[in-house]
Image 1 (cartoon, rainbow, N blue to C red):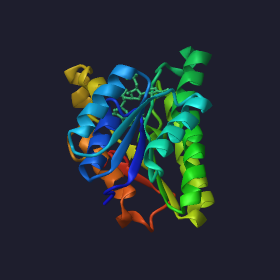
Image 2 (image 1 turned 120 degrees about the horizontal axis):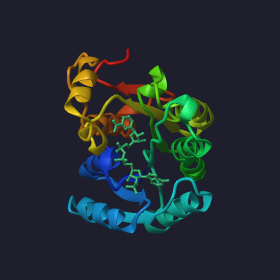
Image 3 (image 1 turned 90 degrees about the vertical axis):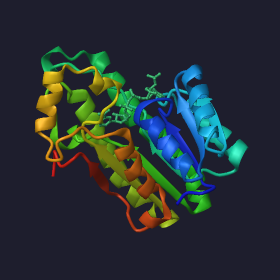
Length: 245
Ligand code: NAP
């Protein structure tokens, strides 16, 4: 388990990223919270510190090269190493193909895919030198299945799985593993807002007959971040209640 390890987590001020941060902190990891807003970052840092580990907040946008480089520079300044990167920051801009605007396509590809590339490149510099690292990309079941109204999002998440495999092959010799977790439908602010009928229809497609929780995703990340997964690289771990197999 990652006691004393240092984890950089993007989009960690709420939702799944926040749960991942709390789970890793619960195992004794020191956490670097990277997110867009100062208020959210400060609140996450305060909550993480209550678990008795160190936490550092960095306000940054994963689509900006300098922000990603800065997050790793600050992490190195504070902790002297980075063992784990979780590329979790992600957005949706849903629209049917015929109505999807160029800026909706660009925004989603930029955050979900380019952001993961920029942070992975910054992480690779540090982790290659250390001869140790764990990079975990948060993809999605719809990157495997497709989903009407989400051409941009599905393409970004399928791309993220390709990035995972390519980086896994490049970094394996440096003892850096790269894997993805592909969540199914997870109970978050987004899914809470759905009408009951839509939630029921979604649940009917899931063999385990419930939406997943952010903790279900955090548990898979814990494994991939741990020593126990040392012989696992280039994989996509599906955490979807069986909705896609
Ligand atoms: P969320 O609640 O919307 O949280 C996403 C976080 O990322 C927010 O804190 C957001 O900041 C931050 N963020 C957005 N753009 C960013 C940027 N450019 N730079 C830095 N941070 C940025 O989302 P979630 O539901 O927890 O999802 C987390 C990840 O899981 C995403 O990659 C998502 O695609 C994936 N996923 C979610 C589900 C699901 O059912 N929820 C299913 C499959 C996959 P703000 O608060 O400022 O917007």
